[in-house]
Length: 64
Image (cartoon, rainbow, N blue to C red; front, side):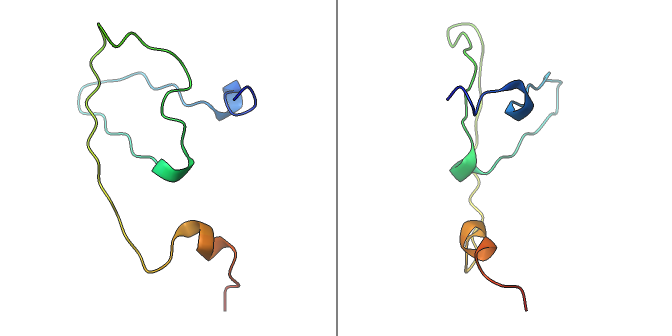
């Protein structure tokens, strides 16, 4: 946890109206930093994109 949450690896977003954030759910820590869930509203929508082979498997294959 300490390694993964170093400042170089953490995205801090200053929200503005209309912003959209997308991430790879398999490789992301959704909340490296605490937030007050009693006063700060979070709205999350799930979108699933599918392919015949996932990006982790693709990375191990040779490109022809």
